[in-house]
Amino acid sequence: MTFRPLTAAVALALALPSAAFADEATDLDEVLVTATRTQIALRDSLSPAQVIGRAEIERSQATSLQQLLAGRAGINLTNTGGLGKQTSLFLRGAGSNQLLVLIDGVRIGSATAGLPALQDLPVEQIERIEIVRGPHSSLYGADAIGGVIQIFTRRDRGGLQPRAMVGIGSNRLREASAGIGSGGERGWFGADVAFLRTDGINACDGTAEGWGAGCFADEPDRDGYRNRSANLRAGTRLAEAWTLEGSALRAEGYNHYDGSWANYSETVQQVFSGKLRFAPSARTALLATVGRSYDESDDYGASGFVGGLATRRDQATLQGDFVLREGHRLTAGLDWLDDHITGTTAYDVDSRENTGVFAEYQGRFGAQQLQAGLRNDDNEQFGSHTTGNLGWGWHFDGGLRLSARYSTGFRAPSFNDLYYPFFGNPDLRPEESENLNLGLAGEGDGWRWTLDVFENRVDDLISFDSTTWLPGNVDRARLRGGELTVATAFAGWDLAAQYSHVDPRNRSEGANRGNLLPRRARDTGRIDLDRGFGAFAFGATVNAAGSRFDDAANLVRVGGYATLDLRVEYALHPDWTVQARVTNLFDRDYQLVDWYNQPGREYGLNLRWQPRR
Image (cartoon, rainbow, N blue to C red):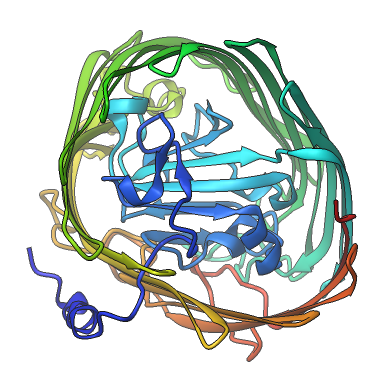
């Protein structure tokens, strides 16, 4: 494999050993859960990963997941017109429906469209985000071809801790949040509510005339958005070895958009999670988890209600973690998932069950690491499917580590693929992938650098079959690329930089063979620079992406862009902080999807209150 855009970056990394390239913050003891379904140090992960904590979320002053995640390693984002508009995330070039998203361990997303509604998940309810790149079906089953993103809702530790925030911004942005929580040895609890509203921008420059005219509507108006959310959680230590906890998140979205048959939607994202843990010793732990996620979207037009769909996903897991001896761990478990859909569209089949059995081994042999996993999923629709992974790492003196990981993944056909009236194909097979990742990392006192290159071959992609006029397993893709990132501190400044290159090629037979897959920029990057000056803190973010094509034929080109965001905060009092920001400082005019606009220069002002313990 050749990665020409990475050549200069690799040379720079080798020539400047004092530079620090990393996905995560400079805290090298950060804990990661998603990569192995067990707690490990982020530095020991054989899967490329990064963690975004609550402190970084607040420091960034992001008002959406799109703003928070844009430009991070391996991530390509599209958005159809600003806050609350449909947002898709492509991880390492894989499709947005080839990404698994979890909230507190519970799978979310629409089983009909096969996508999570990322635009409706409020950042004020998030404690941390873990991003794990590359296939992880051997741990989680279907859809984890590009990787896994797990969102953890707010958590509280220590004495009673209230908090509140109010904010205003451009396009009549209004936001507020409030919460309270406490945590100790015997238990913890918390509650948070949040509200966000904006008049928005004109989302689409489409026209009702002509084919391929964007949103097929002449609506040069503001397309506003409103979101309100609540999160409740609690946990207790029932006995020395027993722990019980639960959480609930509900987010409601009210979204105006431009469209020919509907232009307003009401959405609900809801997640319930309950966990019972039994750990009789340091060598053995059993975890039982139950969960339910709910995704609902109702659309309205000029004449009223047009139609709607809802997905209910009931889930249960039994997992055992066993320390075989020092440095050797075995994790094994059973997953059960039941998808059920309701709505105004009548499907021949409206529910299906999946049972998965998995095992994962992690071992240390001196300076070397070994990881191996295997999983089998038995699905009511497409039968049995087996996936696996094998990883190896070698820790050298001086903080240098070499790693390699081979893994397979698959995506289950969605209900739309299988059963949409007159356009579904119940004989579809899962999409399959094979991935190889090679990594090199180094770390020192307050710095870390990582370099990863990968190739992911995806077969049996589901797309329109011209011979049957139905969806079929007819396409193939090759996803090739790499990521190089940086985090360090110098002269009082904190620097984090990330650069990604992906070459997502269509490998199917036909006119589009060799073309780039649509809506993925080949090159993306992000630089964050922050510093504190006594009661002041200052930060800047540069976000950039190259051009992309909006169609499979590579005839419609969407230009690249670079934006600069500035932020400042001032501690008025130990309990009070005022934050101010300007995003897209130079008022860059750009799009992520053809015809659909992105906001120009915007300003924001927040006031946060959180009493210090």
